[in-house]
Structures are given as structure tokens and as C-alpha cells.
Image (cartoon, rainbow, N blue to C red; front, side, top):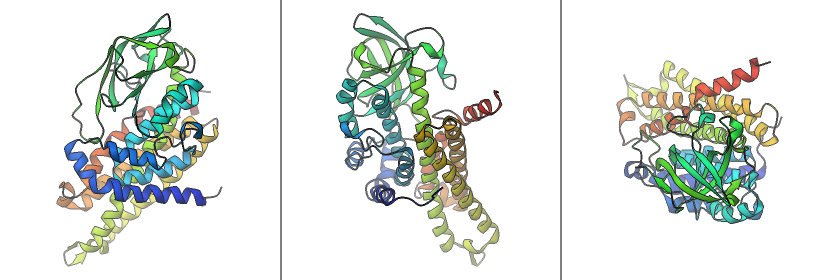
Length: 379
């Protein structure tokens, strides 16, 4: 149990930190207020290896592990939480193709995805199936050398902008074993998109419905085998939960660092805020809870990377803890800023809006508790 980072880990952690400060942080407010998807910045991130963090090297990936990714996403989220979260989703979709796709599929899609010449989206959630993901209705009917897709996906990050959609669709019966994973390319006849959603946060990434109507996709675009889709989707989410937890920790750490600086300067009743014991106690709790969440997340990342038997439960525990603590810390930092924290002149309110959805996506925190409880109590 070695808590020291390796020399390589410190190096890419530092690279991610510097990139976040130089290329993301100065523009985050503009991206948020203008709802700008920062394509060129994303491609700069990919040039550093962040477009295919745990994709194999033969197709342009960085071949890092899950702990490495957690370190990277925590740093990127300090620059712009919303944009870091999109990079996480892109990486999750790319990993699914790399891990389960044929060699032909990997070589066709992954070099451009790793360079972020093209962008990807993960399509599981539907209007009628959110937490109950296995109840999805989108169908893929076999017709010779093609699948014909009909249905809709909801709340898709990158919807309408991404070039590659990794779609869970029903090829068989109504059980989870009837779901398959299929890659659909933008421009395929029958693929269309809804209007861009107007959201509380995550404004630097587009979000839209993805619709399929008699959408013909080559059978060669199948990821894994028929009936393996739900397993693939859940495997992807184990990693996605780690990354979104890391984004929450990064956003919270950014706010806490700024708040500590603010408390050392701001005076009320003739004293600095930093000198009031009640406020010192609050900051002490925040840093303690953040450290605890970070350690839980890193433990889960090692478990997922090693394929440990408890990996899914540990990922759920880490996601639940990190996203709840992250929001609590950011909300507390806003409170410590008083009225200034509520203004757009300060970044805390933006981070608050961005991290709030982390308690909902990649499986709600209620579902995380369900996963944990079922594993512990099912036998």
C-alpha cells in the first residue's frame, strides 16, 4: 500500500495541471456563458494524450491505467469541470470500442478519436429508461449485413456534435441479455438530433436527444457480440463513475483553494474570516472529507483496473462519496464567499452548477446505494 505517486504519474499530473491552468481556466467563464464547445482546446488536450487515456497504443492511445486517469481528470476539472467531464465521456466511449471491438473496428475509429479529430458520445439513457437502463426500447433489427435502428436516446453529451455514437440497442429479448452495442456514425441516414437542451450547468458541452428512424448500420459496427451490450455498458460505467468522481473532487479542490485565499484577505468585525474558529472548523471538515473521497476513489480505481471482484461496488462507493462530498464542499465554499459567491464575477457558482449533475449521471447516487446494498446483502 504505497501512497506515493510514481515519477511518471507526477509528470502527467503536472502536465494536466498546467494545461488546465493555461488552456482551460482562462476561458471557462466564456465557454459557460456562451455555451461554447471548445473544439480546439479539446484537440490540444488530445495532443497531450488525453483523448484516449486508457486506449491501447497501437491505435494512438496512451495506455494508462484507471488511477492515472483519476489523477488527470481531477486536474483537468480544476480548469473547467464541464469540459473535463466531456473528455471523460469521450474516453469511456473510446475505451469500449478498444476493449470489446474487433481489430478492424478499433483501427477504423480509434486513431481519430484518440486525436479528437472526431468526437464520441455514449448512448444508453432513453426518455423512458434512466436509472432502469436495462428497460431500454431502442431496437436494432438484423437485415442482411445491416442492423436497422429505431428509437431515441436522451441527455446525450455531445449529441448533434459528436461524430461517433456508441449505442445500446435491443437485438434480442426484453432482458439485459437482449441488448447489444453498436457504433453509429454521424451522417448515417435515419440518424437525427433534437434541439440542444438548456441546462443548469455543463454548458461547454452540447446535450441533445439522439433519434434513430430506419437507421441502417453495418453489422461490422457491432461492438463485442450480440447480447453483450449491457455488460459492455456497465463496464464502461465503472470507469466513468471513477472519472466523474475525480471531476467532482477537482472542482471542489479548486473552490476550496480559492476560498482559503479569500478567507485570509476578507475581514468582518475587524478580523479576517480565517481567524474565526467556527469557519476554521468548516474548512477543516472540507479538506478532511475531500481527502477521504480522494483515497476511496484511488482505491476503487486500482480495483477497476485490476478487475477485482468487488470493483463495481467500490466504483459505486467512490462515485457516491466523491460526488456528494464534492457538491457539499463547493456549496460550502459559496457560502463562505457570502454574496460574492453568488455572483458570476466569481467562479464558484459556475462550478456549483457543473458538479450538481454528477450526483445524477453515470448512475444516480441512489442507484449507487442500490448497487452497494445488493452486493452486500444478496447472499
